[in-house]
Image 1 (cartoon, one colour):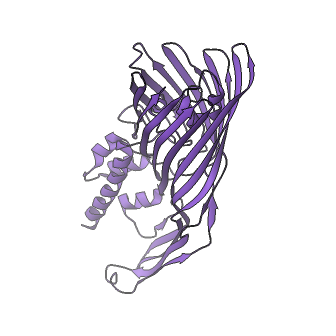
Image 2: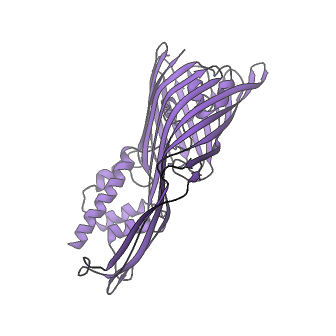
Image 3: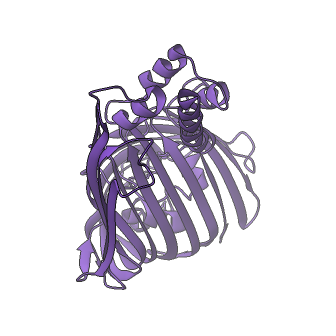
Length: 423
């Protein structure tokens, strides 16, 4: 009976992780801009193509190129992704509600890396983006979180514990933040010769922090003894309900000819957010000795929790470098981007990502897009997108898979929708 109850709990917890990962998925949010649906439809390959209001998300130097200046307004854009590193939609359908056999349990564990089950969630909304000549201004909201469930915990949920086992929470962590940003971009040419033009650009972000949470300490161990369970643990998190700060992006763009452009962008070259609104440290500690079914309601478990104010603290935004080349004219255009982050954090990865995307416009008002990327936080990604182009108005939509190209390997999808006016 106990084994059946434990299986039901394990099945529900794993099903929840499967559902989030399989239904939503994620693109690599190492740099902002995944609310720009044209880029999402090309797997994020866009540094050489971005123009007008979109340039400030990918490379402000493009505003200094004569071929990339485009007066317009980004009315609204939204991008949403949630992913995991282990399970696909097929897994969710197969194991949800099932009575797991030993073969099923081992199959589930084989899909989880040794570092554990990682779940990411990212969201971005852009609005009021305006581009006039070499200048652009926009408003953006961004949120990112990352949680890791340790391999040992998953194994215990599935198989239970036996005499002499020791369970550890090492390797588990969680962090997340959200903020709003007012973005000012400027690009200017510094060299022009024939059809070649070199430009540099900068984007300054004024950041309004909305929420921050970071687990700073997580230690817990439990052992199965002849007298019952024994263990102790502590979790401490640092939180804040607001703050303010800045970030600076630097870029360069070279127009090789009227057909080809290369670009380089250093996202968050410098950044800092001072979290000064209700900063707190919150914690929970517990210990138990000889805990068993006969004394589980007694004082065998000793626990305490606390919440105390702390001094203001600062955090930075993840820094990334992106470089790429693009064919910018004709019915078939394409872009190839390489992106490298410097540290692992919510919304970021230290693994490089390479993206290749194309846009075909047999009909000028109905572009078709596709893209492929690999590396980064989420491995293989396959993207599709389209849009509507009529005088002044454009509407773009895109979807991108995560972690694979089939239902057996795909661990989710990113969705993006954006619309605006070009003058």
